[in-house]
Image (cartoon, rainbow, N blue to C red; front, side, top):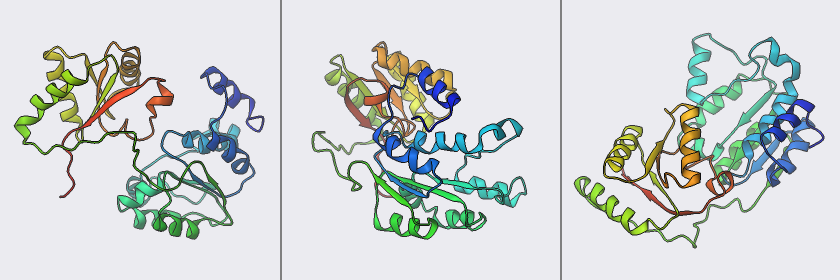
Length: 274
């Protein structure tokens, strides 16, 4: 922790962080030394701060002189490059986050195109929740003598302590079935309901509230203040039902962030085939 700047430490203390997570403890010293790094840890383990805080140290006072950090999806970044809005000639610090998911979504060609425009003497950080063969192979091509940190198991495994039930029903049966599930599960704990589409998330939340259920929704179109409000209501138990998209499926560890027990999660509109 002492490797970080004073203003970083002040912000960390103000935010209420007492100590770094294991991936942060292992990742910060190596990253701050300028080494390439492979970081493998489960979602919610603190990977984002593992690369973000060293980045702030890296640019330091330059932040006051203009834009020094770009955060983008691969496709959008290429659009900006081709339109002449930016170039990558001055990039010295490259982070590929959620590498496993980007490959699953077919972004390998875009990633290769982006990396080809960056100087090879850059520092590269490669983060993933899992470590399948194709993710490892791509990483070996982009990194130079990387330090590898693994927290937990790199293999994706089912949690056997969670009971999983799949029901195949028609669209008109879904809401009545959801209402029945809520009646059975409302025991004072919290319930998450996942949707694929933001519009459905809001629509069902409105219907639930009209029927008297204490439900709120959260997704990427909500303002940050609204998201904070929904999470606070969910944590306090005032709204123990939270409808959401994958904004809460990745990157938001409810057990750590909210310090509460999730009793049930329901996924609607699950599609296994096109």
